[in-house]
Amino acid sequence: MQFKPKFDDVNEKISTDEFFSLLAYLDKTLAVGVEMERPISYGRSIATALKAPEGKQRDLSYFKRSPLNPYNIAYIYPDGSVHNNEGDGGAEIVFAGTTDTFHQIRAKLHAIEEKLDELGCDQFDESCSNHITLVTTSDKIVPDAVLKNLFQLSRAFCSGLLLFGGATSSTVVRPRMGMFAATQIVKSPLGEPALQLLTTPKYSFCNMSKQAYYSVGGRSAMAGICVEFRAADGHRVPSALAALMVLYKSIAHKAVELSLNGVVNADSIHDWDANKRACSAIIGGPAGQRAVGVEMAQDNARALLEFIAPQLKAYGEEPTQILRKLIDEPLYIRQIGHRNKWKLIERDLSGRNHDNALSPNEVGLVDIVIAGNLRATSAKLYRDAVAQQMNLSVRMVEYLMQKIREKTGKDLIFDEEMQRYTIR
Image 1 (cartoon, rainbow, N blue to C red):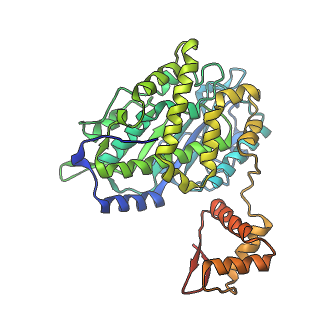
Image 2 (cartoon, one colour):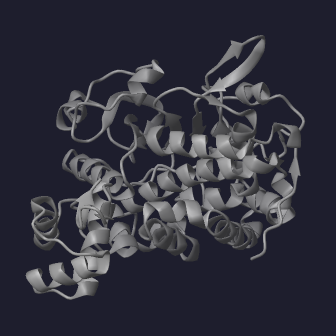
């Protein structure tokens, strides 16, 4: 697909030096978290089982801080807008902002859902949602163009993002989506000060009302990034949710890239008219229009994956594979076919064990690298020697290296001076 986006507000474009500085900043500090509304009666047993504090915390630093529990949960509290399958009050479990890898996030989400099953959590209920938040763990002045482009991308690919998160079998997305996560697809930041984005209502698809800013020399400047995306329904499928979380991180990186040229026109990236009609059909549209709306949303979702492919691939191949499966057979359909059983859907999407522990062969390879006894004049010769020592094929050694990278977030890099691989 050939993309020829147009740009406005060109006076706000960033320099190449700013581009690389911002990418380095996001690589180290951009965290992603999610408010997981779940159909389980609230009680102390949840906090005890998940080793997490009770009570809502309004201090954003609490959400940014890495929690001292194995499930990465910042806090848990009862939510009056959420209920279980019997209509009783549900719970909100706040998965704190993390810079973990896709595999590490998925493993923790899987462990949470397993524990909730032990506590008798019901399957998906349409009152529940998964609000995904991007937040930087430290502050830095972020150019206005970056925040504007982040908002513009959420508009340009709104219908595709709705499709990725929609899990309500009768209506694609939950009926209250239009009330509590309005798309604001008609609102454009072009020609407006970036501060206007901060006035978006809390109940917005792309909510920037928590975004921090301060004044420098009489000019307001954005401080870091804090954006909440309220689109995804409260499904309990770890692979789907983790893939969507890194998808939004990829969108933030793409927003930085676009800022080299100014602020992008949302209606110039893909079929804008189809995108708007798809949103209307999916959110409260007549049943007769829904099927057509879904097809247009599928096209929009495919365009999104292609548009941000370089950024998304930084998280490995699996998130992209999962998202493609969700385009071909969205969650709202899978919920019907599997009678809302999250484990069956999870198995279909990933087909793998979600234990993030290293396999015996992966541990063996790490031991060889850390021991530092093996030397070679090139990376290829080193891998050849490892393959011979472990009695494996060279291709298998390369596969093991990739899995170690994905599971741990650490890279294996060949150092020519030391003549061996190191872990960094």
